[in-house]
Structure formats: C-alpha cells, structure tokens
Amino acid sequence: MADKAQTSKLGRRDRLNKDNLFFLKSKDCVGREITLLDDVYTTGTTLHQAAACLYEAGAKKISTISLAR
Image 1 (tube, rainbow, N blue to C red):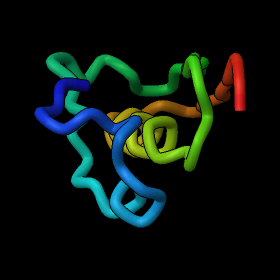
Image 2: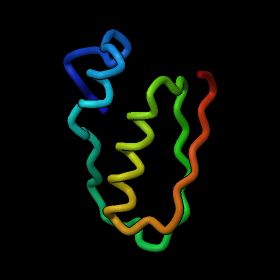
Image 3: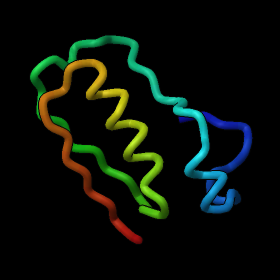
C-alpha cells in the first residue's frame, strides 16, 4: 500500500474515509483461505480494505492477525 500521506499521521476519521488503495495483479484467490498480518491495528482500515479486495477476487475466508493495538 503506497500513499503520499503517512497513515500514522492521519486522524481516525481521515483513516476511515481513505480510498481503498489495494489491488491485485492476479485474481487467483477463488476459494482460498487467506490470513492477513498487520503490525499495528488502529482503526482496522488496512485490514478491512485488503480483505474487501481479496473477497472481491473470490477468497473464501479471510483471517487477520495484528501484532499490537
């Protein structure tokens, strides 16, 4: 996820309203179970947006793990 403004410097409302910048080069997710890992869970926006992209590509189940909150 590349962005000009650092997400860590945005407020809660701004984070929740960010456009989804995630995309897949390959849509080879159909029927897969995927685990996402995030270093710090703040608002959950990163995980929610990544999961939405994967579900759109056909993922069956997505689990998440965060190292810190």
